[in-house]
Structures are given as C-alpha cells and as structure tokens.
Length: 72
Image (tube, rainbow, N blue to C red):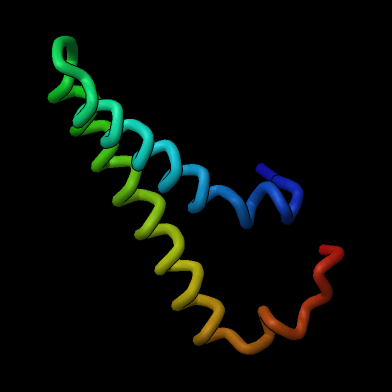
C-alpha cells in the first residue's frame, strides 16, 4: 500500500499522540474502562516509539535513503 510521504512520516507521531491521550484519559477517569484505556495507550505509545526507532535506524544504515528526493 502506497501512502503520501507526509502521511507516512506522521504515522509514528500519530500513534504516540493517540497513546498519550489514552493514557491521560485513563489517569483522569474516575470510573469506567481505565485498565483498557491504559493498556491501549501503552500499546499505542510503544508502537509509535518502536516505529520511529526502526525508521531512524534504517535511515542511518542506508545512505541512499537520504539521497532520494522528497518528491517520491
């Protein structure tokens, strides 16, 4: 599946942002599915950080990635 580059680059930040909102909601709620929100938030935060780290490692080890134009 092809995604436009700006959307592709934003995915780790979206995952992390959603995770942070879910964790904050779990901490602020007095009643309700706190455990579920906390678990989903931690999973989303972890996915965002892992994806960001994998992309960073790939880019640092593959120099030709940086030489491509941003229009691709």
